[in-house]
Image 1: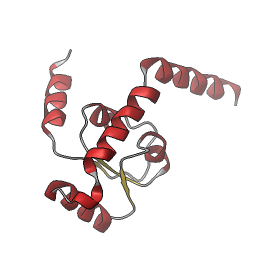
Image 2 (image 1 turned 120 degrees about the vertical axis):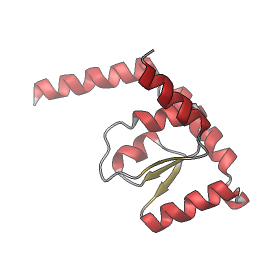
Image 3 (image 1 turned 90 degrees about the vertical axis):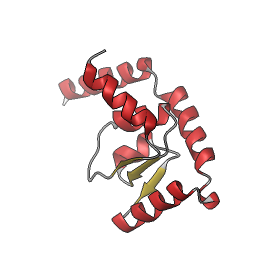
Image 4 (image 1 turned 60 degrees about the vertical axis):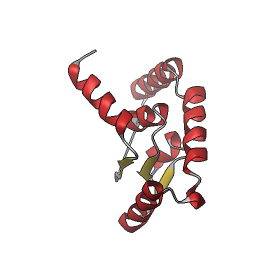
Length: 115
């Protein structure tokens, strides 16, 4: 494995929260990695994130992101972070397999050639 991936993986594994606030997103592989490492995921509430962060914390503004991150880091019980992380992990294990990823890529490639 390339050194960059090893470093990124080590940093993600040690993270207390993963945050990705995007305006657009196709397939958020880094969020998938965070889910698999059972790191709480905070993402912007946009189409790409809705597809692959079904049980994470989706936020609509910077203020909402800040409040959510603070609640996760403080251990606010109302956020049920452990439950959300577990649901995200289980969802990722069920849906985000290499086989499914390859099938989605093949489907996208087919659509691109038929347009």
